[in-house]
Length: 440
Image (tube, rainbow, N blue to C red; front, side, top):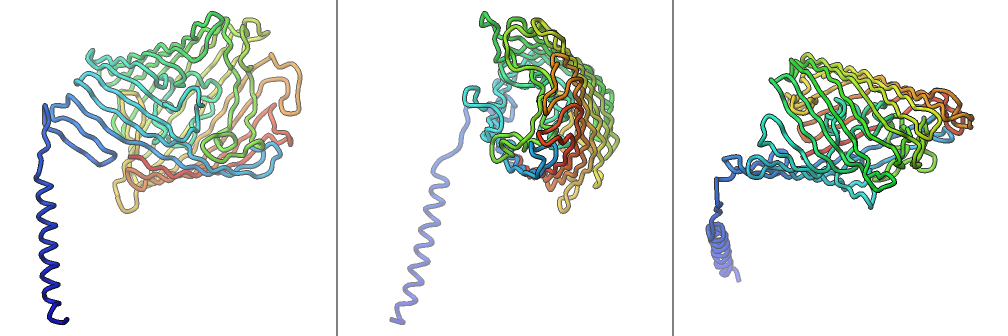
């Protein structure tokens, strides 16, 4: 028995040798070839494959945002504390280049936080032609261009939810429909875009409601940590003979009061009606919004703000609706890194940590305000009084960019309203929202 042990060791060595030889044979059994230029494969920040001549490429990436929020007062119907845990976004993203001049982008949202079974969950599905340089032509489903904060990806916005003024005119930078957009960077200091969009709304003849957007930004300083950005924009749609939902319903910066993709406050969440009406044929003639935007950044410090003015012109409705909204925000990176800025799209991007051990730490404050003048409301109710309604919020927060893939955020929101309250009579509320984000 003991004499057999060396033979057992020899057998093991022979077996291992055969396995290694088989592995080597498999590894060299074939070669990888291409029918064109050589390939470059990158795995940092997703999987990217491209030809060396840059004629073809594709990149597979995505984002996951998991949120948890606690809130009380105005945010709930009875004023008591509630919470919500939900997947804010869960995207798979596929984009790339074909034949050098054609670019494509497909983003699919698996969280079902927005959209429904009839409209699907494609956040974007578009093709862009770049052969008319410096003009790019984009076709398909995408977000129409209106506003600095909307142009910035949800991955890299400073606050967890975008400013309240967007709640007063959600259609201006929405992706519900299909369209075409032309955009261009001119002279390394100007960005211009214009689009025609066919909404998922029809008039009585079945003709879709058309949306027109234009945006222009002048940014003579457009490098990270050295940004000066001023812009104007306008959006218009013809609503004659169309049944379009014009309700102005804000969550006041707390998504968990009413959301999909997980748990929310359910029937106890407050999402008040500040103005407008549900889809009713013939109420309105047209809908228009104009706005201005500005930003300045110096090293780790940045300031930005936007203002918009909306007018819904009455047809069969008794009165026009007028809306004003704005926000102002200041942010500072404690660890010294600047916010990246991209002139193509006129938008801020990520903060890349300089120290891989501690990451980058950012703090910010934002003030939001909007006013809705809708004189079609002529009778007070328990939750809405006659007259102009207002919403205001203060948001303070901290963002930890642990690395280029992981971001952890916490926001505190203090909101108040005028001529609007919950069923318990509260016109102010507090909320805390936290998020962990992973991008690749």
